[in-house]
Structure formats: C-alpha cells, structure tokens
Length: 274
Image 1: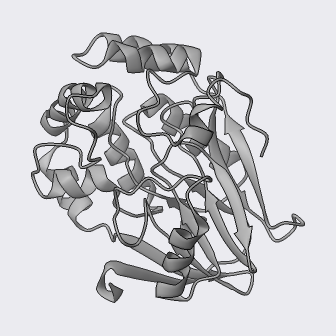
Image 2: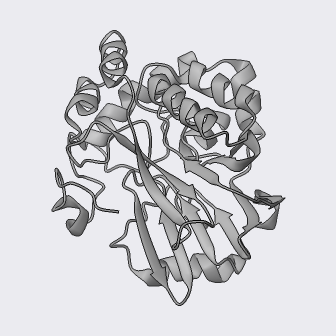
Image 3: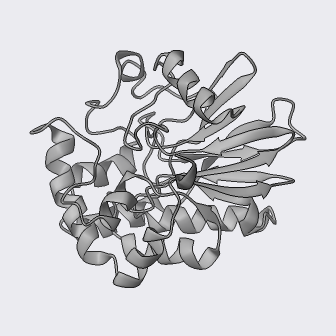
C-alpha cells in the first residue's frame, strides 16, 4: 500500500479539490479560471482522478491537467487506460445501462488519448497524502481497498473507518461516486468533492468542487461551478458518445440510478444543501 501513496509534504493556505473531469474540457477550463482568479497556485490544487470519461475531449483534458502541474491521482479510468484494459473498470452490472454506455465512451476515449498522455497517466500515484491545518490528509478515488468502489454518504461508516485506520489519516478527500458530501465521526472527516464533468443528479447544470480553508469555521466549503454546458453537450452529440449522457449536461439529471443506494436514489432531482 505504502508504495502507491505519494507524500506531497505540508500544504498551507487555501486548497482546491476537484475530480471527475470526465473529458469535459469546458468545465475544466472554467475551473482553472476560478483557481486563477483566486490566485491559488498549482501546488495547492488536487484532482481526485477520472480526468477521462464520458465527454468529448479526453486528450485535451489530460494535456491541460498535465501542463497545469497540479497534483493528481489516478482514477479507475486512468488505471485501466494505463493497463490497456477493455473497459473503464467501474464493474457495472453486465447488460445494464451504465455497462452499455461504457462500451461507447470508453473505446472512444482509448482512441483519443495519445501515447504521450498515457505515459503521463502511468506516472500518477493512486493516492496522495499531505499535512494541512495540523491534520494528516489522504486523497483517494473510491477507497483504499478498491479504486472503483462507490462510497456514498449512506455507505456504512464502518467501511470508511477501515480506510482511516489503514493509513491513520484524520481527513479523507474522495471522488468517484459523482455526488458531493461531508461526513464526520470521532473527529474524522470524509469529504467527497463531487465531480466537475457531470451534474450531481440534482437537476442543476452547475457542478461541484471543494475548497479547504483554515479561515472557514469547519475548514471547508463546497462550491458550484458554471461552465458552457451547452457547448459540452453539442460536442458530445458530434461524436459516437451516449446521447443520454449529453442530455444530462442540459438537465442535471442522470439517465439512471443503477449505481446509487436507495437513499441517494430518492434524492434525484433534489437541490443539494452542503
């Protein structure tokens, strides 16, 4: 496990956490603009993985993140691209809608991503650790035990506790599940920044990221991001990509809730209060 974790030392000041770019260049460019307006350096920006995904511009997204010089871990999509796997690694139910759609967008992404980008992807760690505000912080994608594991707010705390216990962290910053949330227990904090490449199934076209700041009472705040979702939608429709996912960019509603537990399924279309 230790060899998969990259220690980036101690960070000071504000930190931006985001993930799930999902090949959505318009969202990524808007997020970068937010970082520049806030004057947050690349050394204080962390991506929780899945730069590549459902949308139209995987190569451009990888190159932007690489050239930006921010910290980034490999999501399950990056791991499977690196390993030349024939699917995205999400372990969707065979024959389900997510499985069928992944057979469209993943081969498209494989063809688009360059050898140069694959070499860079191969250099990414699976996990990052650092110290911030007198806390040991761990960044992961799904969980320490399975990068593809979907961990939601309703997921039993025992599973989350096992992650904390393994690395003795006090704060975990996660991604993958697509829906932002915060959960605290015994002075431990599990924060999922959400994703910027797709809406959070909340009926809103804006997407989510996380900002850490010692000047905020609880130490963090979830923030929404506006971007040119209509352009992202149009670019998807020009390519052999799932039209249902392109529609999600316009409606803020997922095509299906196959991966969601019951609690999160009942929240579809509801405004998130974080």
